[in-house]
Length: 176
Image (cartoon, rainbow, N blue to C red; front, side, top):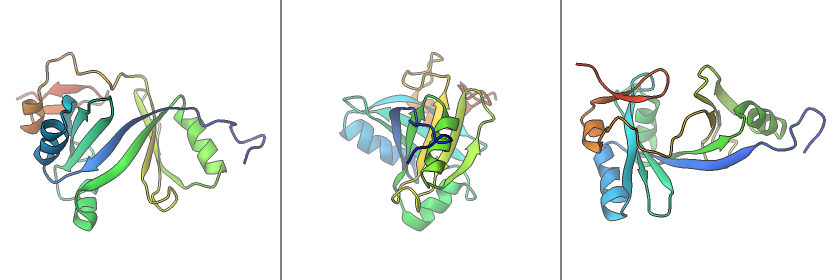
């Protein structure tokens, strides 16, 4: 389905990660880190979304993002209450998320929650009922998300709630 107003290509660069909702990230670390040999990449609290994030790289390079609620009104808390732990979304990285949104919308997919406010991480989502039962996060970014932070943040720091993501998407130690 192409035409003059439909981009010929969505500009997909790669699958970035699969996000798994968990009540406690330690459960995911036990499975994906300890049992399967993954290594901690980065993490922290996103206070705006009410979630704690832990990213683990499995042998072979696949990333798993563990997301757990920090408060009862967080969307992931509602997800866990309805469905229990499991795959929450798949994140796809595009050259330009606006082009991807235009292409998917023109092809009849329902794209919602478009957020182009940050120059470092722009995103939108394809609803599960439109995406074959899968929530797809579409994003473009100016940042590297495949390297550990230079700040020396540890998994223990993240699990203890000592790390927070700033407005420019950097993970930093919380100020006391």
